[in-house]
Length: 239
Image (cartoon, rainbow, N blue to C red; front, side):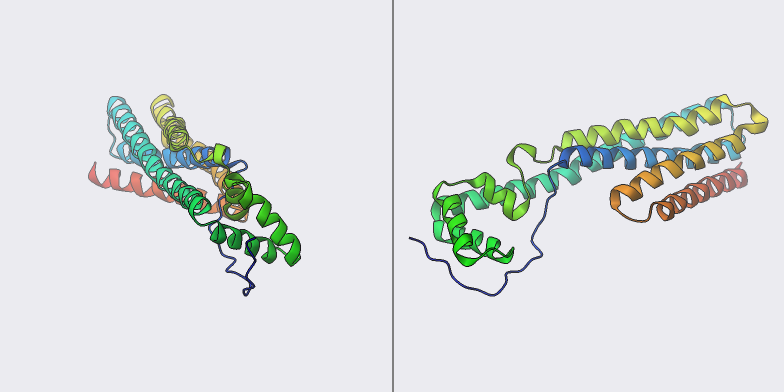
């Protein structure tokens, strides 16, 4: 029988993937950030064109171009980012699978130390580790040590799609406002609508990141407002 080895408390800062709701939370995060980026970047561009006193056609073309190119860029970037995380998950899964197959003693020691560090008595930790390793329960090893669920690995296509379509939805707000609202109120109403929406996306993003929501929302509004003001000022100078 494999015997447990007594060591000091193992390093606690292990790779951790919270995957119980992993894909849904990741898609939600990508969607919120995509919408936020769509609003800010498109608003900055159309405000610059508006500041240059360009025609409604020029405003529409600039806005649509910004929306499509930005959505493709954000979707592609999200795909690359989540793919890298997925590759790391796959690497961990393969490493643990190979170890369980070729070096059961190492697998046992890893699980024993894991349970012992969580406060289980030595005999209970050893019994649980023996049961898992003897049954080659790779799913439990991954779930216990890394919080990875085999049937819930990250999906880069879902995140990329959420970012892409959310960016387009976000970009539609300043684009429609700047092109459909009558000229005397075009700029002011667009800025007001963008700021209100940025409060919502900033608040949601802050809650997902578990940081002070009001602070995150206010910061997001300030960034968006500065983007529009600077864009309009540059357009006015050039125009």
